[in-house]
Image 1 (cartoon, rainbow, N blue to C red):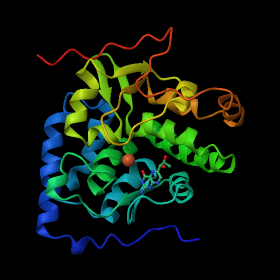
Image 2: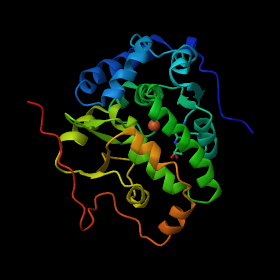
Image 3: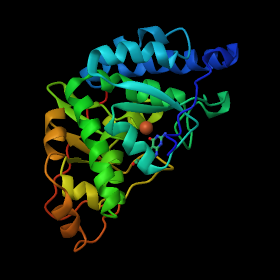
Length: 267
Ligand code: HBI
Ligand code: FE
């Protein structure tokens, strides 16, 4: 069973591709300072080797492996769900090899090397989050067997990709899909339009999501330990209970739900 890994062929990146990386990297540095979670900002230090251009996955893996036992493997793009989960369950993060074009700086339909490395790798330096993502991979393999993959895909989407965390200084971003996007990094924290709801596992697994625009709702955790604890139980009874419920539209707020206030716009 092929695991879809390929060689990164780092030497084949041209000057323009490294220049696009540096443009994206520099632009996000200006944004993440007071918007990304402290754990993300700390993890970025592990990416020091990446300020000059697209990093060599092998070198970056050495640094990451020493921190939390995770390594990065190159893949051509989105891989089948079971392949993806099998990698996560083995602490291997599949990173796409290609980088977006200059006319795609603000939006890209599928992950590229900037989204995967800049967006995902910093959080993999955090031991609790690193454990969560491996537990998620293991859970994904079980969900596949139970025909409930779409439920976990929502959990991944509203935490790993678009999650917010509460801190003493307000809401902060830990989701990779946000932190690699300039516009959404600002919108998700301060704009009054999207709803921000407290993390609730069953609510998340009922909530649809959009892949082609900014999110209409975000879920807020109090800690990464909360995330990890949520993945500990066997989900089989959850999936059965969810079959008796209807899906929830991304923009809906249910009776009794109290959305969390957005951050005040920075002075
Ligand atoms: N493949 N390379 C790659 N990266 C992803 O983030 C990814 C994937 N395949 C499937 C997938 N994500 C989502 O469907 C997860 O919810 C499984
Ligand atoms: Fe991603």
